[in-house]
Image 1: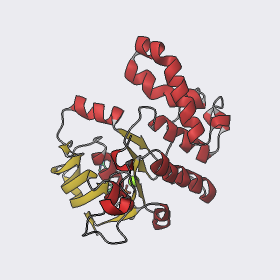
Image 2: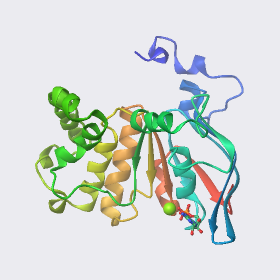
Image 3: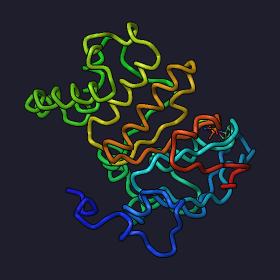
Length: 258
Ligand code: ADP
Ligand code: MG
């Protein structure tokens, strides 16, 4: 059980320096789940250096829904990929729960991605031949290897079923991706990203390919996960209006946090 759910009231946990607008998360858990410090990243094209991140500093509160906004090309995907250890910065540091993660060996980064982070993208990357349920099980098939997967299959199926029900797709388990709406496909991808019970969900323009209604569905789903599952959600988007369901907005402008 969460320690802070014990009889002490939330008000008594509030540090004196925090004001009435301090988000709940800082009262519940003042430690950030992620900290980015002095992050630089350039791409190199032939002899040309393209600087993208020019000293990004930010903190992500534990258990909150944080949106990082910025115009197209401002470096949002680059930043999210670095935070998810998919790529390494040129300089600067990234901490996850006080542990530096940007310079870990490849195997350790892979472990983090498999166990601690879930990721979703603008495109859903679902396998067209598999049902919704099977798509959600794919990370387990890949991580476990054949025999371990087979041994645990029943438990995994139950877990995948629960996740699909949680994202409102209990009635679509046997459908193939081609039989789903865009919003349903993205919610399948969300369920898949949660199969290893991550603590942080990194979402790169998750509504970028959806109409307004489907986009709202996906945002509601992310907001519910943050609320009900105690998941930290970090979403990047070029669309300012999408930030309204989140607890905080961070603006990336010209390679730094504005
Ligand atoms: P955003 O997600 O905010 O649209 P990105 O992080 O994708 O921005 O890209 C930031 C800039 O870096 C863009 O100008 C883009 O063209 C450039 N860029 C991204 N990835 C690469 C790459 N692999 N090689 C060279 N340039 C890249
Ligand atoms: Mg992008």
